[in-house]
Length: 205
Image (tube, rainbow, N blue to C red; front, side, top):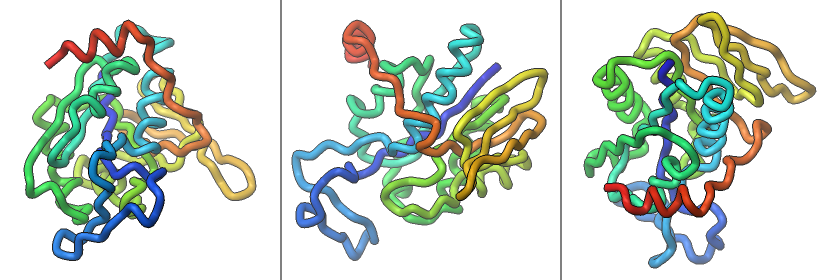
């Protein structure tokens, strides 16, 4: 079973507002100098969902996948330290864009290039644009079902089942695999990697 988790590098949302600037030409928010970016928080929760599935099925493979540019590899390798088996970074200046459709097409092409997956997990939205469009477009391009805003993810007998967060409770939804699932903060935070794992990952290229 192969799980792909989409990860986006973003400006740290904890930076104070006065320290941020807007690049009008690139149409994006730019963080303060010397402040490292972070992995989008919802994407970290998607990774945690994948790791919980792997806890029950140690032979399952988790691949972190990101499309962007100017990656801070030390930041992105945090996914490996947490427990992902592999990390693929698609680095191209053209990916410095707000165009959700373009990013979804790149990610879909990458999923196909990797030979597909049984499940793709994404954060419900990114903290920089808050569009919540890429996972839905990705599912459409792959022609897979999409289950959204999951606080719990289970996989059994070729089907994925989630608890979907609602304003007044939750809803159980299921779909046949392969599928795309978006994960929300109610699932819980990403586990903290051990010192040994961080040291091992720091030596990887």
